[in-house]
Image (cartoon, rainbow, N blue to C red):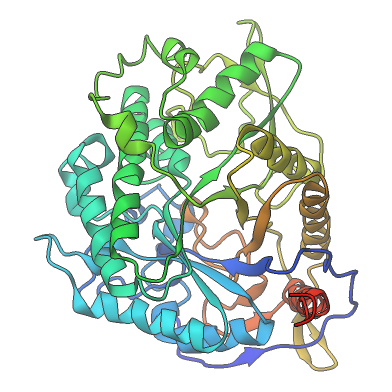
Length: 491
């Protein structure tokens, strides 16, 4: 049973690895979270059930039957967590808004849900932290799933209505809006492989969901602009697959499904012909209606980039074991409709606790390739981090977590971001995943990504060495930025 506690430990780290201060002035360094993973309070103040409430309460869907019912109790402890962010010196905080807190099953706006996020945003601003709000991080209201979810075109229109309501409430204060977080996961893991909510395993359904998520993005962007008064940046966040290997056909296929299925319509107004050809035996794409691509292709100000690892692929020759090291849980279906015959080969180590390979050069390559493809579009790293099995030790100042592996991971990936900037990439920020240990979807509470440890029994927060490193990095960046700021005579 989890008990109330407001204790927060900030013991100093054993060592201070080199900080990453070589970023341009105006570059934002912060951290990120997601609503269902941290908030808890799933039945309070008018919140209605989401697909992740249903999925996590279904036996066999999550590790140990874990749910987000309590999570890390951020809903009740957000003021404490805001103070923690201020102590770490965060320049920006990316959070997601729980759609089920904002609009009820009758389509009415919930004042209590609006009030929670309004207080959160005000708390960030009062502490000098820029709010970056994501509208959808996978917690679709269950009643919409009952009506078809992302397989139902109407869900995209309901999403646009929700976007309008939250923009009316917060559109004078949010620094950056993100429409969708990782629609690849929502579509392919939620409707294709069965690993995520709602747990369907149907390739045709996954591709239908891809399109309706793209449509939701396109419909929401004008609503965010129309109802915001502070000229915020509007963005989408994609989890790009960095595809490697000598087999060009395999690389092309996975790039089409994982990456271009979203960048094509969002950024170029089209689905590439090879994607349609690769999947023609799965679906005829008749759900794409006339005018949809124009609706989806809305100008955005920023592209969010989530990066964790790489994949190496080749076409399966039909003999021997079909290797499937794609980094995702096997729940019976496939997240690769039309390309199930592509093999995902074992990656060279080292690995995180998720089994994902650590490849900072993949981040640099990704940022550079995106810049070359879309040179006018600024980028922001909206998620990057690592899960490791942390151990609480006793130091001179009390309990501590010496997570050297996570510190090393961040040092190397920050260096990769700096290298990309040196190669001309317009990179605007870096948000570490995650601020807090939390509910890691199908893995429940078994994997810890946080730079702040959470004791799930007591809810005590403990800043890890990685959190101290991030604080030192931000402090050094602020000092360097102040030195680079133009004087009155320079202006």
